[in-house]
Amino acid sequence: MKNGHHEPLPLSPDYVSGSTYAADVCVLRYALERHAQTKPDEIFAAFEGGERWTFAQTLEQVVTLAGNLHELGVRQHDHVVLVLPTCPLALRVMFAANYLGAVYVPVNPALKGSSLEHVLHNAGAKIAIVHDSVLDRVLAAAPPTLTTVVHSSDDETGLRGGVALLGVSAITKASAPPPAPPKPIEPFDTQSIIYTSGTTGRSKGVLSSYMHALSCVGPDAWNCLRADDRQMVHMPLFHIGGAFIATASLCVGSSIGVVSHFRTEAFWDQVRELKITSAFLLGAMATFLLKQPPSPKDRDHGLRMVFIVPLGQSGKPFRQRFGVDFFTLFNMTEICTPLISRANPAKDNICGRPRAGVEVRLVDEYDRIIEDGAVGQLILRTEAPWALNHGYNANPQATADAWRNGWFHTGDAFFRDADGDYHFVDRLKDAIRRRGENISSYEIEVELLSHPAVREAAAIPVPSEHSEDEVMIVLATAAGATIKPEDVIRHLQPRVAHHMIPRYVRIIDELPKTPTAKVEKHILRAEGITADTWDRERAGISIRREKL
Image 1: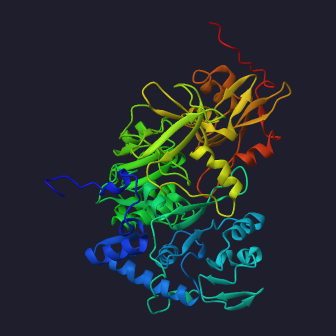
Image 2: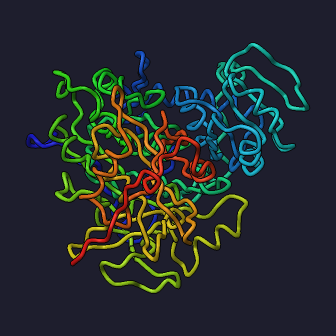
Image 3: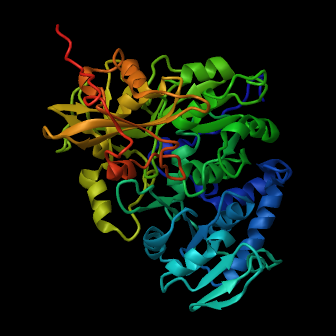
């Protein structure tokens, strides 16, 4: 602290000048070595259950595991797959791979069958570190390139199907430090390959440099963070909300509190135990927390700020109830937080405004700039090189499609209002067209979530006998609540235009989601109109256009 004020995280003047960060700022190996020397006894990582790592201990553990990986043949630029939950071992593997100048490739442990086979083949790794619970399915999906698998216990070793199977002690035992990489690790070298959620097609492996990871969630993008903040890592490590927060915090010398996954009922206890001051919340997470019964402990915590993404209508009630500042932003695996709000924005449903160092455009299908108020695709580029992804692994066509005309195309539709605030409309592939009107599924979902009995909501198109689409919504109710389809219609009527009122309503226990809490709308679209779906027109409820 200086003069009673908390210091912000240091900014990088090199970024503003259009260069990359210095290697000892953004390259994990060099940043870790620097912090272990300058503040060896400060806590870097606090884990649920009591385990704590200082910066010196973090370096010691990373060097040990890196030495063992080197003995197993891992070299600079090699890919190291990990199929692990968020845990101390997973962080050690990630950091150790980077310490060697290798690339960490975190894979969703929930993947099975052809989806897992696709990711493992695309990754092209020779070695994988996996949890015991997924060992059999990883071996069943292993490509010929995968020759060594280390699993999370020492119960079984030997050969299985031509793959050398090793116990976890092979990477955790005492070892000599590895030799220095043959070449210095550069800011533009690939640090990670993180796979997209694959909600509309096969997952793509996003190539991210050290510069990109720090540009994405570091101080130039998330400039509301402070040097004394402890960020919660509760998103999975195959998501940038887990992996990039962990690696960026290590690079800037702040700290993290690590839990295995988000749990509504445990969230505030975790915040208190780990002394969390900042947390990234998906919009659904904020909704779940708000719909918990009020508690005398609602303000008994050290959390000072949250990101809520997407914001929806939950920001103001979250601040009022829990007493924290809220921010919102727009980001995705491939980019670097191009839009971010100030603290406690007055408007609902916004994504913020462009930040310094990023140029943003809204364009039509031919990349022509559109006027304010019109809906177009968000595209962007950065002043600094390597501050965005540098392609999709082994997928040149997808890379070319996304990067056409020198701009990265997000695939997301937005509009900008007269004040300069950007509003998310929909994924381009999720838009609904009903009787000549384009409909945002997101706008319907936001209003549905404002109903106290609705816990989750998805709006999807289903075929209409009249041509184009009909609107269908799929809901999950809050704990202990019940809701009737007629109630939903009455709730929406004063809140959305007549053509957005759904014809079909389906109520289920829980919406299908990826492990990063994104609703898998493709599953709901494939299921379509089921036997338990309520039909508004069959129930005799008609919605008329308002007369002006």
